[in-house]
Amino acid sequence: MVLRNRAARADIGGPLPGRYDVTALRWFLAWGHLLGLGIGLGAVWARSLALRGRLDADGIRRVLTADTWWGVAALLWIATGVWRLFGATEKATDYYLSNHIFWAKMVLLLGVLIMEVRPIVTFAGWRKALARGATPDTSTAPRLARVSRAQAITVVLMVLAAAAMARGIGGR
Image (tube, rainbow, N blue to C red; front, top):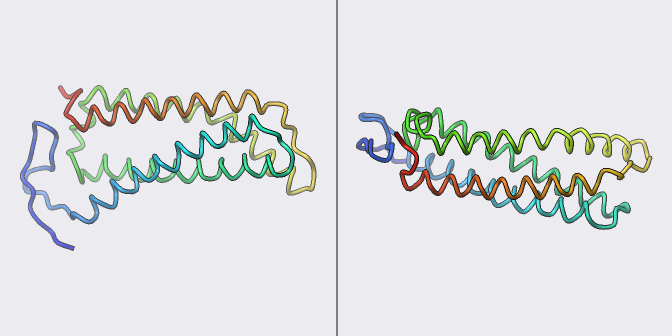
């Protein structure tokens, strides 16, 4: 890995003056964050479709598989996002904290997390029922499909916010 001193670019929130960064780390974190987007958007949409489909054993398996991938994406987004925020690998932490688009993106993320409470509880119950050999109660599936669609739309809005931030919009 090559270390190099990067000049500060305060106009778009570049790395801090005199701070060293690792190009490969920056690349890896950006890759992980974008990979989470691809996995997450696909998974939450697949979960929505599976919840609207036939919920026999295969249908329930599709829902729970998509839900697992949605969880993997959440871990990727949050881990890489927190690292990028506080590690100042791309931009100084102050860039994010003083950017109103960043805060809008965080409100959207909070919305996704709040919407996820019911699916987490419900699918944990489904998994427990299946482990006991019982059939889970799928009566809430239509509502959970709507929640999943709302989350997909919210993720797309988060991408819009991220694109604005990448172009320096929202800073003070």
